[in-house]
Length: 256
Length: 256
Image (cartoon, rainbow over all chains, first blue to last red; front, side, top):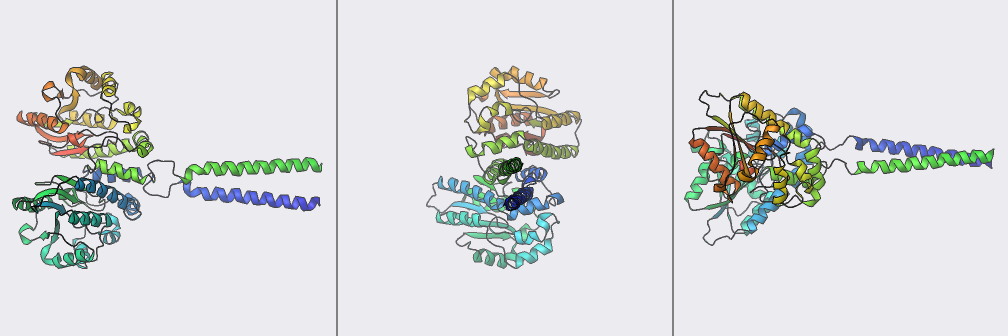
C-alpha cells in the first residue's frame, strides 16, 4: 500500500514538474515581445518623424524597419490609425453647414488615400526597395487596387452630405486614366464630381505645384475647399490647400 | 519514518504548488504587455494623429491614455524621437551655406522645445487634467525647467554654425521675463540673439497670429529664417514660417 502511495506521489511530482516546465516554456514568447511595433523604438521614431513631416525627400524605408513597417501596414495598426482620423474628419464634416449653391468642395488624393497599393508594395519590401516607376505603372494599369475601407466610409459620408468630391491624382491621364476610372468605380467610389489626372500640360511638375494649380482652378470656378485629404504632405502643401488638411499615414514611400 | 517521509513529500508538493502558483502570477504581466506603448493601439493612433496635425484644439489627453503618455514621456521613446529629429535638423544645417552678413536666422520655441515642463505635467496626469493657467505660471516663475538635451545639442550646433538664434515664446514678458531668462541661462542656452516674450501689445492673440507677427518683423529686419522648431503646430503655421519647420513631439497639451 505504501509502495502504491509512493508511486502515486511520484506521478504527482512528475506531473507538477512537467506543468512547471511547460509553463516556463510557454512564457518565453512573452519575454521578448513578438509585436514588431513594440520596443522597435528607432522605427517608431522614424515613422513618427515621417508622419509629422520632419523627415522629407526620403528615398527608401530604412532596411532595419522592414518588419516594423510590414507589421504596421498589415496587422491592424494602419487601419486603426485611418479609422481614428476618419472619425475626426466626420466630426468636422458634421460641423459644416453645406450650402445649396453646390460649391462646397472636398479633395481626395487617389493612391493610398482612396485605393491601396499595399499588395504592390509587399513585393517592394514595403518601401525598403527603391521606387520602380515601370513596375508601379504595370500594377496601376491592372486596376486592382482595393478600396481603403475607412476612406470609402469618408467618401460615402461626403457624398451623402452633398459635398462635391474631387479626386486629384498625379497618375498620368493618357496611360492610366481608364484603368483608374474603372478601378475606382469597381471599388465603390461612385458619385464624385470629377476625377482629375495629370495631363501633358503638367508633366514633370512636382506634386505640390501640380496639385496647387488644380486647386487654384477649382477655387477659380467658385468652389470652397473645406477639406483636403492625402497620404503625402505634397497633397496638402502649396496654395489653396483648403480649410482643413488631413495627413493619412504612409510610411512606404515619399512623393516630392 | 514513513510519517516523516510523508511530511517531507507533503512539503515538496506544497512548495511545487506555490512555485507553480507564483509562476502563474508572475507570467500575468506578460499576457498583457507591460510596456504601455505596446498594443495600446488606440493611444498610439491618437498620438500619431496629434503629431501629424490631424487632431486639433484638443483640451485633454484621453484618460485611457494616461499610462501610455507617461511611459512615452519618461521611459525613453520621447527622447529617442527628439534625438532622431535633431539628427535630421543637423544634417539640414550642414547643407546651409551661412553668409557673413549675420542675417541667417533660426527660431526656437521655449516651452517643451528648449526647456521641459514634464515635471509640472506629471502633477497634471501628463495632460489628462485640463490646463491650469495659474498652476503653470507658478511653476514657470520658479525657473526650474530642465533643458531638453537634444534641443540643447541643436542650439549649440546653431550657435557654432553662426546662426542668429531667436527664442520666441508666448510667455508673458512682464510676469515671466526674468524667470525665463534666468532659467534658460542656467540650463546652458547661452549666445542666442534675442529672447522674445509676449508683450502687452500681443495680449490675447492666438499663438499663430502672435508668432507670425514676430517672424514678419524679423524678416522686415532682413533676417532669413532657415529653420523654425517648436512642439506646437501653432509655432509653425501662419506667415513667414521659415524655409523648414520641425514639429517636436508633445502629446501633453495643445496651444491654439
